[in-house]
Image 1 (spheres, rainbow, N blue to C red):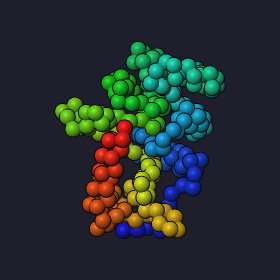
Image 2 (tube, helix red, strand yellow):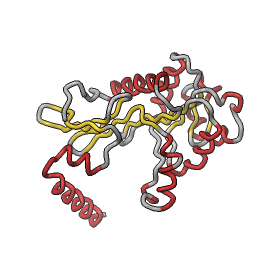
Image 3 (cartoon, rainbow, N blue to C red):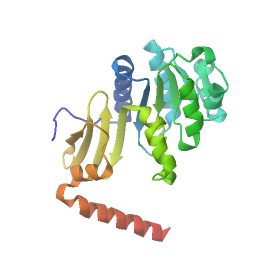
Image 4 (cartoon, rainbow, N blue to C red):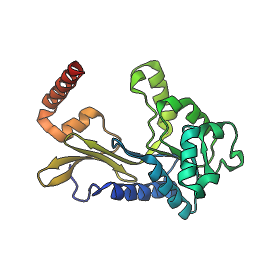
Length: 234
């Protein structure tokens, strides 16, 4: 079904504002302590966004800490935002006991990747306060269907809730803004229009069906052929 109230942000600045609003609502009113915010844009520079989020979380009275995947990124953030230097660290710093007396504070984890999975999970296990994962990716396509992937999906990955998600698609977009449903938007001649909502994040097949209807299977086959030809040319 479609809903005229469902709409996409006009630009990245608006998407950031929407994400912050959804996150603050989730932290105040939602159940659970682990929330993710994700923009699936190629080339997005997350450091400036993380710094702005830190200031916004401070303004909201949450007394946050910010953690990066490695010491180099933490050092760059301290250089670019010296006013946050005393609350900025790496995941390894936290694992080794830094801020041990502040584990009830809000933690903003910046873009953890599959290679950080075990370290990030260890930090979260130690943490009693809310944890916000900004543009993180916990699942690795290389182990997507194996025992390791299944164990992770049933374990640590399943403990996260989505406060905000925005992902461009070939002919539309996928969005979730807490506490609303997930929406698939289709790009028409007059812009993007919300066409279908889902209570949980939809699988690729459901997204294709929402976008293409009876032509979903044809679009899937064409996409597979495009990927095959691209592989041959590389």
